[in-house]
Length: 253
Image 1 (tube, helix red, strand yellow):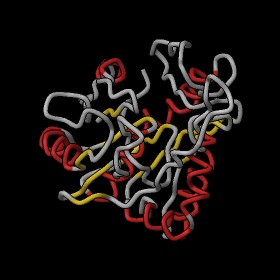
Image 2 (cartoon, rainbow, N blue to C red):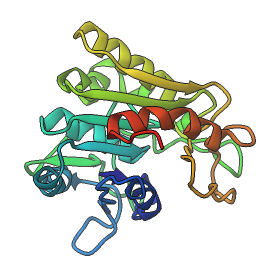
Image 3 (cartoon, rainbow, N blue to C red):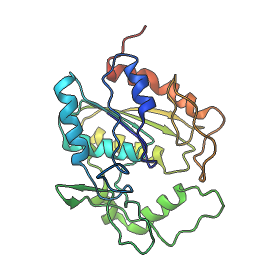
């Protein structure tokens, strides 16, 4: 299952790439579609477990691949559904964040629900203002985490120690969307205390995007900073690719 991030788009290109290697790949739109929340807010986690119903009937293994918000969804789902064999979390988070809102006057709501109930989340600091025209949202997320306090952060922490399958985390040290490298460190430490191994692919000069071999480069025209030097998305994707091949069972050509 391939999950895109905050764009809400259907990541058909990544699914097509995996399918070209013989993988049964489902690109899932999880908000913004017909009958779905218009933004990433109060998205039912059943959206993903119901998709797993389809994959589990056809596939020997179920692997979730998610980027950013999609990584958040993949990690949460894997903790709840023991049919998930592996997760590849690209630019992950270790906590659940407040959902998107259309207006600052909207009430604070979780990004996710489970059985109709909101999943505990870290609220975003709505008083935060970017210091530049092209904002680095990592400042917002780190400030919000600080303001929320330890109790709220603990309640919103994704219980990755409950997921017994294979986990690959892919991070850039210059991620300017959110602090994925620090999140990965926290995830690794919690799983290690539970006796679980975690693979980390890290590039200190990479940012938020990850481009796998064979994928088109990202559009450089973004209204916000993502971080990383020239070629970083492709370099990080190339480093992650052998681990994706392994968890997906793709044999060398």
